[in-house]
Length: 278
Image 1 (cartoon, rainbow, N blue to C red):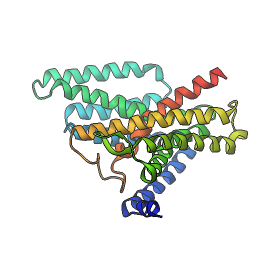
Image 2 (tube, one colour):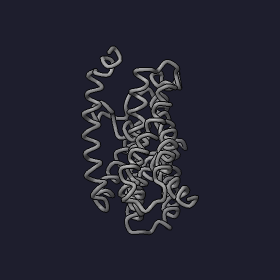
Image 3 (tube, one colour):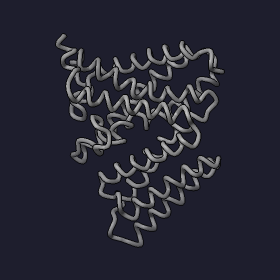
Image 4 (spheres, one colour):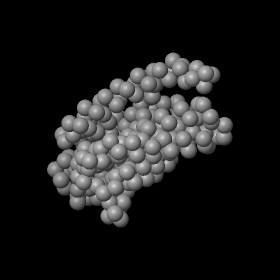
């Protein structure tokens, strides 16, 4: 009973309501797919990039604006099916950043240029895999594994951690996260993957989803926690609580999508790898 009272706090209820709204938005955009999803992911990526650059006070600088332009250009390349030119785009973007660095010297430091380049890859490039997974064969069903791995793991880890957590996972970086919560998150994500596979198995062309999905979700659950802690590390390095206040109870895009960012590409490549093994 005491554990339940610990859960029913104002912050938890606020977090729950915001989470439900996020899920509804995800349902509409991901089920619709195509350009609706592409536009949504592009918007999320731009906001996330803005939040990251703001941490370093680069959001309205020339390199920062170059990052926004490169982000839109990247999604245009993806939409038009010219994925073979992504590396070319990244090289051109880097050259432009270097030009801004040398022709405005010493206005910007080398670290500023590296942050802008990292931001495009970390936020924009990796979040784009939500769209790319959706466009795979069976993508309308596989794409939900991203959220089962990340949000499902996060929720299960939070619940298990609040009720049973005793041993700190990363005491300095994230004191509230526990080893028990982390294990509970991974097992919870795997269980969600199995339940999901049993529900939709007849709609898939994949072989043995009841084995594949729990494995994918378990691995994704582990990886998602690394993404979560990475985002926390950046915040601690710069003494901020949240990246923004965009989402009540959750913070900003990077606070809510910190695990999705790193999980999305893992799901894309892990599904392809396991399918080839099968």
